Length: 260
Length: 291
Image (cartoon, one colour):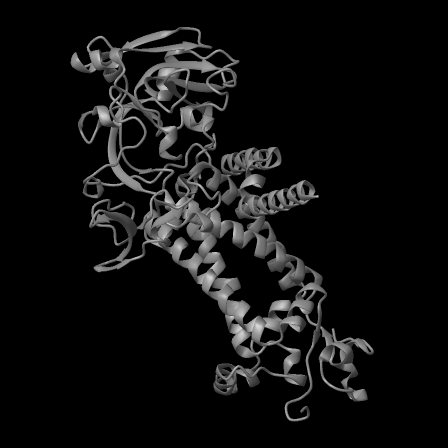
């Protein structure tokens, strides 16, 4: 009998604990469900479809003046990659740096910083909106990505521009640091304000902000503006890279489309 | 809209035996659309608030203009060490108050943790900006769709002009309405067939000012929409001002909901809940005829 009542009591306690856990984290459990993740993916697609329907290529992100520049421009994610090959390049001021453009292109490219600087330039003072909520204003100089894509001549199957980077994110993954990468679609890539920036506020791009080259995608949030670009690969589908969501941050739950 | 329910009116009125003329005391107060959109709103606003606080926690400060001031934020929730212990603070301008336990520093499994708003107020409960944003967008779409259904139906059915616009008589007697409200005495009988003027004005402000401002300020935070509609930035005075207005308007809604619930409780919780679920509302007997 004693044994039985213990069992019953244990059951009751277990039941109460389970109920408590459910009512406390009931919302969290729904959030982690497959259904919720499907809803999140659908809404990401809805945000993207809606904004693409509203936004034409001519709509420019607001541009500001030098008086508006942020005194302190915050930096997130990697700010000082300690990968050996990158450190070496910083030491020699990126003299041996060559941006590789390949994948679904007719003419793969290898462009040094001097060659990139010789291409058409664009300077823009824009607001950088971080997903965390903050905004900073900075001046960026670089060459429009559209021109670089035109030099390489895209194959008709190309749909996304994938950025491979020098930096890795040490996020506790047992298989070692995760290489950083990102992607945008061709519409974003061909937008007139989308540039491969090698200067910030009139100076060579500092390490903190993505030296030697970062992309500016002014109508989206900061996490789409990949820093430390090593290679640009044209792909038809990004599902075979990383965890398949199109970028390091996307693999960690952030929306692929970041216009909102 | 006035309909008669025989017996049920008396049964739920809570009073003694009703006179025959009381048979028309139970009226259809809320249409199906109003009832449905009301409860969808309850769900949406709850989820939007809690996921919004999660998003806010990623940078728990408020700014004006287009830029964030990292060194001297106009308003912030922060934490710092005082006598070897972590304390949470809310600071607005030069005013600073210790909020340890709720804001800045709160307890997660007994451990003091650096957070703007505490885990029980955010969705998800742990720090997770990406999921917070996903939840926020799901319910933002639902909220806007629900709001559009409510607005379109409200205009077509003339619900707004009939039920939300105060009458001339009500304007003339607004002073008396305020006094009666302050004494927690609510209209009964014929006068209770319509919203009183304070209800009308409050609902009007929430529906046509507060919630639209909240939505538009939210849109102004979108770099995509700013490119297409730069007017939004001019109207709100910059993206960071829009973010601050979004936050303040959200707490305006919280304030409205708190007062709303309090008044639902003191003015007859059963009758009020029944009317928002089934539509039927007992207007009660005229002042002075009961007791």
